[in-house]
Length: 451
Image 1 (tube, rainbow, N blue to C red):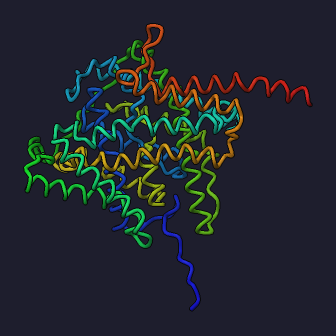
Image 2: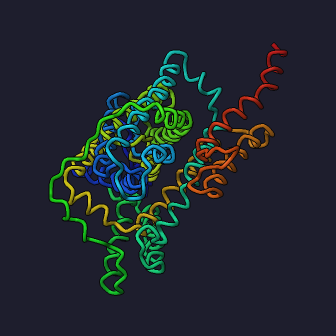
Image 3: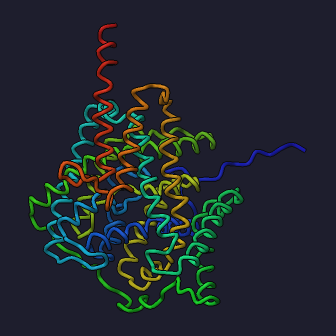
C-alpha cells in the first residue's frame, strides 16, 4: 500500500481559519495572555478592565501599523513594573489615584517614541545597523532570560501561593494540567484539535480543580466576584498628566525592550518559515520587518497609555502558543484582540476567566515560559552562533547570569548596585549589548588591517 504524506497542520500569517475555529483559536490566545496582563495591572495600580481593553486595542493598532505582516499579540510588560510602581506607589490589587496613573501614562507615551525612533533608523538605514548592536549572540540569551526569569512566577502560581490555596491540592492540579497539555501536544497530530492543546489542558485543569473543590473542599475556584459589578461596565479610562519625573523613570526602560522585541521577531521568523517550508509555501521575510515591528511596538505603548493602560510588549506566551500549535494566523490574533476589548466591558465574562485557578495557569506557564527560553536557544542554533568563541561565550554568560541571577537574587528583580535599583532583564540586555560591542573591537581592527 502506498504511503500517503500527511499535509502539515497549521496556519501561516495570511491564512484564515473558518469562523468557528477562528473563535476557538482566539480564545486560546486570550487565555494564555490574560493572567500576566491582569497581574501587571494588579502590581502597578492600573485598572484591570482598562488594562484588558488597552491590550486588545494596542494589538489591533499594531496589526494595522504592520499591515498584518507580523503575527504578534500585545500584552502588559513586566519590564516596566518597577519604574511604574515608583510613580504610582501602588500596593498589590489596589488601583492608584487617577493623577498618579496619569503621570505614569505620560512617561509611557514618551517611552514609545524610543521604539519608534529605533524603527525609523532601521527603516532608513536597514536592519544591519541594528544587527551590529543586536546580533543573535545577544538576542538569543535575552530571549532565554525572558523565559527563565519567569520560571519563579510559574512555580509560585503552580504552588497556589497567589490564590492562598492548599499547596498540596494546588501542586496536584498544576502537575495534572502540565501533563495534560504535554499529552495533548504530543498525541494530537491532525485536524483542528492539534492546534488547541493549551486550551484543552487548561480546561482539563479547570474541571479537575472544580472536582477537587467539590470532593475535598480545597477552595481552588472562587466564583464570589463574578457578578459583583453588574453585567456591563465601561473601563475606567484616564488621561495622561505631564510629569518629567515619570519620563525619566520610565523612558529608559524602552531601550531594554528593543532587544526583547528583536528576539521575539527572530523567534517568530524561525517558526513561521519552518511551517512555510513544511507546507511548500513562499518564505515570509518577517525578520526583515524589524523596523516596522519596533514602530508598531512604540505605537502600541502610546495608544495603550492614552486610554490608561500600562506599557506593553509582544507577548512571549502567545508566541509560544503559536509555535506549539503552528497557528500564526493574523486573523486569529485580530479576533483575540476584538474579543478582549469586548470582555473589558462584559465584567462577568472577564471575571469568569479570572476564576481559572492560579494552579492551573501555573501548570500551563511551566510549559509556556520554558518554551520562550528554548526559543532563545533555537535562535542561536539557527543563526549558527559559534559557541566555541571566547567572545561569544563571555557575552552569553554575562547576559544569563545578570538576567537570571538578578531576577532571583534581589527583591523584585531589582539589582542593588552603587545605590541604584536596576531591573535585571533591562540591565542584562544593556550590559550584553555594550559588552558585545567592546569585545568585537579587536576583530573589527583585524578585519580592517586585512583589507
